[in-house]
Image 1 (cartoon, rainbow, N blue to C red):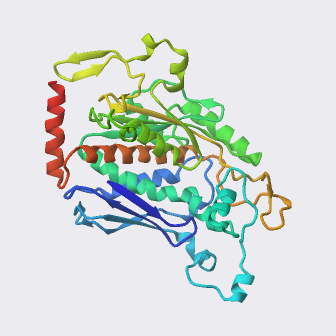
Image 2: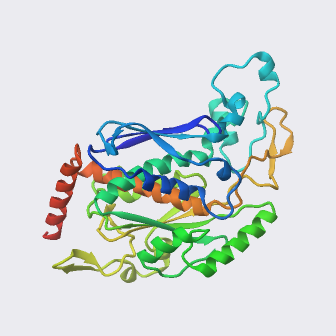
Amino acid sequence: MRFLTSGESHGPKLSAIVEGFPANLEIDKERMTNELIKRQGGYGRGRRMQIEKDTFQFGSGIRHAKTLGSPIMIEIINDDFKHWSKIMGSDPLTPEEAESMRRVITKPRPGHADLVGGMKYNMRDLRNVLERSSARETAARVAVGALCKELLHALDIRIVSRVKQIGSVRDEGRYNLADIREFSDQSSVRMVSEEKTGEAEELIDATKKNGDSIGGVVEVIVENPIPGLGSHVHYDRKLDAKIAGSVVSINAFKGVEFGAGFEAASTPGSEVQDEITYDDEKGYTRRTNNLGGFEGGMTTGMPIVVKAVMKPIPTLYKPLLSVDINSKEEFKATIERSDACAVPAASVVCEHMVAIEVARAVLDKFPHDDMDELKAAVGAYKKRVKEY
């Protein structure tokens, strides 16, 4: 399974092409739409989320709510494009229009792709860089991830996410998966604790008032994964490595850990490794899950636990120092519309990037021209490894 996204932040639409899905998978479009709505939520978001509705449509690959086995096209219309049609349109400009063009950007923002992208692609208007590097593109990735969650749902694999930390506010409580599933979706910051939700809101308000931004830590948990996804044989087939790469590909994400993660550095090996047990009903399992559901780059069948850190958004309302690429003079960096905190939304994006990699691993391992073929192959394999 592979996918490709296209589109700019203020362009006419975002699109995605997904290739390699089995035929006859039933699609719940309302459930997919709810995933896109969750990405737009969260305390501290900017005005852009009030403009865009992020409703999507299928352009191909789906007929009567079932996949055809052919490439699936997903489109998300940018409602704000009507105000940007001259600035972001594909038609050529007259010399007069080009001369009077507004919103040309020559002052790169620290922490963004602006300067390096401009140098790499030889762009004198840095809008050509920031429009594509914008986190707006993640709406298309969430749509692809929502499609992947439909596949995983049919195989009884579930994925949940939550925010563990915003700035100095940490929600370190130990929760069962049902609590995370229920309360993170209800919380304005996707924390499970109501008390910590209030503290995080206060911190976001104070940060926004100061013209600053704030980051945090998110957690994704995959329930009931199939054991043996990924491979120990080749470095580029290890599933934990693929998940780590996909997570860090999300805008502003700077680090990933699995299970106990970096805490393992200060913990004796006897307390880190997950002891193996066998149960006639469940088959092989582990007493603990410090390794986050992975051994040797492969899933163990225990829940996959991924934690990731998001840096503060670099677009600030008290802009940092930059240099004009034309005059080389120092200026305060250009301000684009931005959020004080996007960690809650980022947890949703992270959840869907993990869903994409798990779904890809499933389809890499099992024959899947048709959903019945896929389900039969998965069922036979799970029976075999249980009796191993």
